[in-house]
Length: 241
Image 1 (cartoon, one colour):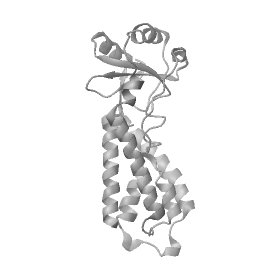
Image 2 (cartoon, one colour; image 1 turned 180 degrees about the vertical axis):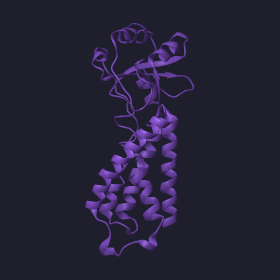
Image 3 (tube, rainbow, N blue to C red; image 1 turned 45 degrees about the vertical axis):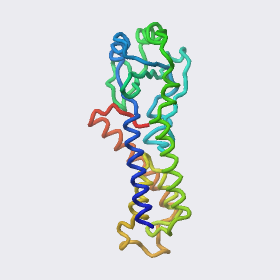
Image 4 (cartoon, rainbow, N blue to C red; image 1 turned 90 degrees about the vertical axis):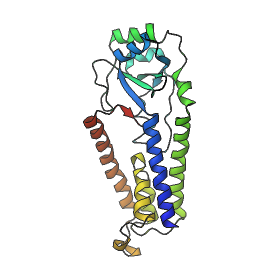
């Protein structure tokens, strides 16, 4: 049964990542947004709180779907409000100021002329709300459900599954919280899948919860840094859910 569990968790993780990339946000600058609006390509638009991709999404809180909360128009000047719109047949688009290169690791506040265009042209266009459109997306619903199944299933295996060999249950309890589901993948390959079982320590020498917590902090920080580095090197404009 252990190989079956390892394969199941791994496949769930792969599917979760694919849905993240399919349903993630594409970052564009304001000039691109203006061009899409002028050519009638924009199908919905909204101001949202915080920035999609940083709050409630990968690489942190990977087990939940991306949630968009409406933001009031007067918060545009504060720089704490994001502009998101949709185009038929494409990912939702997250708008950044023109002076900022569209990348996951860069951000900036709006200048007065940009705020005026957003208020006077984009938000008065009569388009429906992106918040409602995105919340109803089957990809978003499937991603959130799959993330919960992956997190809950892995946690159940840690608590009630076969006795772990490389670290105790507390060790893995902490590590499965690693960003982007990497902890669940590590548990599936290393523990459930039996990778390097021949090097497993004696039961009384397995890594404990303290090491797991430190691993969560250390490997979690490295994972976030690696994710940001890759998006910078590859010029990625897709923010996983």
